[in-house]
Amino acid sequence: MIYLDYNATTPCDPEVVAAMLPYFSQKFGNAASKTHPYGWIADEAVEQARRQVARLIGATEQEVIFTSGSTEGCNLALKGVFELYAVKGNHIITCVTEHKAVLDTCQHLEQRGATVTYLPVDAAGLISLEELEAAIRPETILIAVMYANNETGVIQPVKAIGAIAKKHKVLFFSDATQAAGKLPLDVQTDGIDLLALSAHKLYGPKGVGALYIRRKGPRVSLKAQIDGGGHERGFRSGTLNVPGIAGLGKACSLCSEGMEAEQQRLRSLRDQLEQGLLQSGDVSVNGSLQSRMPHVSNLSFRGIKAERMISALNSELAFSVGSACTSASKAPSHVLEAMGLDQASLDGAIRFSLGRFTTAEEIAQTINLVRAQLDRLKY
Ligand SMILES: *Cc1c(COP(=O)(O)O)cnc(C)c1O
Image (spheres, rainbow, N blue to C red):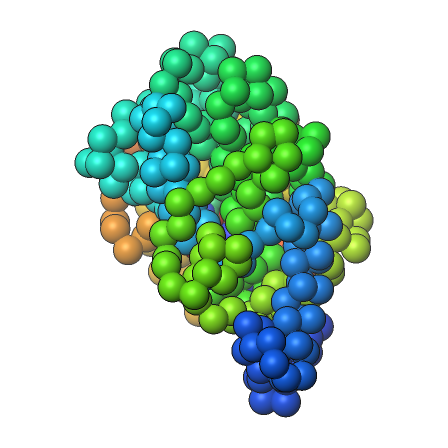
């Protein structure tokens, strides 16, 4: 079976699993226990992970808090800022192609009195910086734009967004779940004030993540969404998931190590895949070719129903139609729709996402498998 759905989730790296194991039974202490070595040892693991996460994104360790993943990170950033900055205003700017973790949270906040501007995207999946700046009002408190899109891999102009946010003294939150560990991101040069990432998208375990909260220039604060005990400097109470956090830390440091080389390797495999498939009929790439993550390929096979292709191959190839995160609802991809795709391109859209364990052999096989279905499935 070939796995090309790394944007839905990644397998844990064996080194990550090894780093987690001691914290289940030998070193099982509660990181908040201050009176004995069980607690101290757990706390040491947590603080080491905090440094590893911070290093990956150019933050200081005091600026990183642990969460249960990016859905929680997005909720905490948006709701936490909305509640704490209510005196300044109630206006949030986001984008139509965000993940549901951001869009659904914005909808929830609209019911609680927020005004939300949803910026459109162009055919390449990019927002317009002019439209962003024009949308800022005196009561704007937050810009929430993702770093890279989960469905298309399109990378938003984050540095420029950060500069606009700073110029207008508005906070900038970026959902970097897909970019963290894969692109050399840096909260300083990118001008990001809040950033969410998730372990299971970067070869760590499920159910753990981190939120970066800027401490200087400006100092950002949040209203906690989970109360009780005051863990994580009061931003997020609850006994820490020590094995998960140790795994997240290890996963971050593994990603930091060979990032450039891995990007090159995946870009070359992805390009090979696209070359192999683009010659076979009415196929095109969705999303900006200039600003796209190197391991993602979202292709429209016009004249084919994506679901039929995927079910025809589901015992050999794992890949997805639209977004795996929202495939509970059978609606067409809100991302591709926002990019203005016609019906045939929406119906035939398939996402391939490659990763650490993808091989050239698997890509060659994938090309053959998909091509073999194309004529058969043509409607
Ligand atoms: C996966 C994903 C999320 C949700 O993260 P979880 O840790 O699974 O809750 C949010 N945003 C993006 C862009 C994602 O890809």
